[in-house]
Length: 103
Image (cartoon, rainbow, N blue to C red; front, side, top):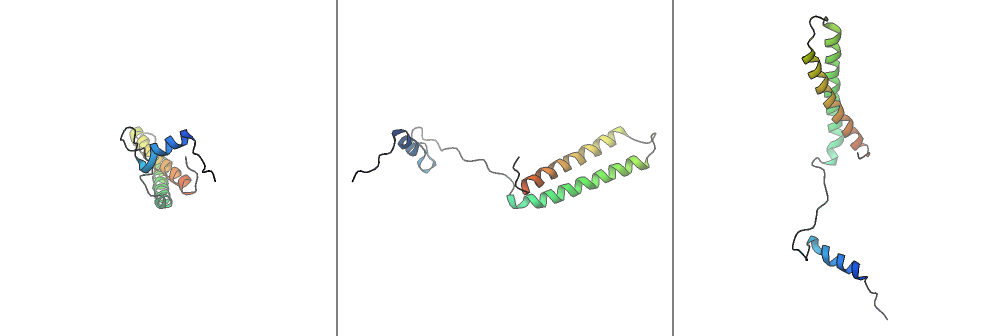
């Protein structure tokens, strides 16, 4: 019986990445990229960040509706809108990640 032969290129790749070590240069092979946040935390993070963003958005709308044009502050409006936007953006991101849409 004839033993199957491994293609020379395949044999080189197997030798190159055996045990995660590069035997030609002595360096460790690259590791895959992993999320710094556990996947199990995605649903919780989405609910929390979306809730915070919605509360800040509600505060923004109440501020706009109850203050007169003379008493409004552009800096306060921009800061409130920016913080709400960041929380809603991260909440949307984690909601997509929790539902399996990896962006």
